[in-house]
Amino acid sequence: MAHPAPVAPTAPVITPISLKSLAPWAILVGLLALTLLYFVGAEQGATAALSGAGVHEWVHDARHLLGFPCH
Image (cartoon, rainbow, N blue to C red; front, side, top):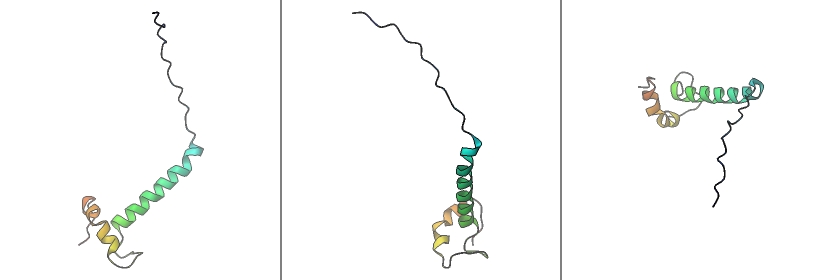
C-alpha cells in the first residue's frame, strides 16, 4: 500500500478587525460594564434608581468582594 506524501501545513491567514467595525461592540461592552458597576457600587445609596432592597440583596456579596461599603 502506498502512503501519500505528507503535506506541509500552511499558516492560517489572520485578517485584522477594523476599529470602525469594533467600535459599536466596544461601546456596548463599556455601557454594560458601567451599568453593572453602578448596580454593584451605588444602587441603594444616595443615587438609587430603584426602590426597595432587592438589588442590594442580589449584589451584596459582589459589593463586599469589590470593596464597596454597604453597611
